[in-house]
Image (cartoon, rainbow, N blue to C red):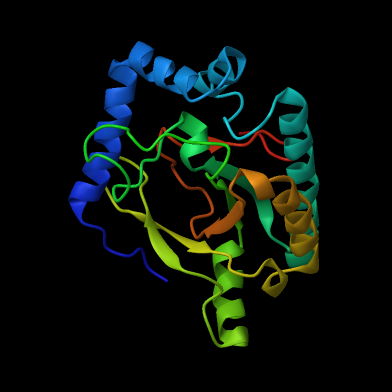
Length: 215
């Protein structure tokens, strides 16, 4: 599995939106307030503490704890190493970086707790090899493969969506069912895998701090 090609303007637009938000902080914060987000949640998002999809620190702490437990289970079941997680999607910074959503060069597709997905990326040593074996076993891809922006320049990464968690693991399916239910009225939960065991992530994504990782 090799990184798919992506037109360079897509990545350029992603960084243009990021740069606009950084250069128009008060305009952007006002937009989030108008959308109904509290100052406490906005500050937590701006500080990189908690994405906007969580109702408060208690729910977020529960989420991080559950992921720490999931990481240990996946490491034990598949002999993966250094399993950790990336939070991506519009709730991390408050707007979508998807070049196909909104106005081209500034953030206009603002996150919403009613319809924005909660997007989780699973990272770990051995994940890529496992996915290759699983694809051969199933006779089909486990999900859609798509390019992943790492930095302003350089090679793109490759991520693979998880269409059916039960195809991967009963433990993953059980964890998914619990949190998909919690997020059911907030846009749902999406899981993807990163094929790089130690990816560089762009500024609109964040490592999730769990008891099992140091990021």
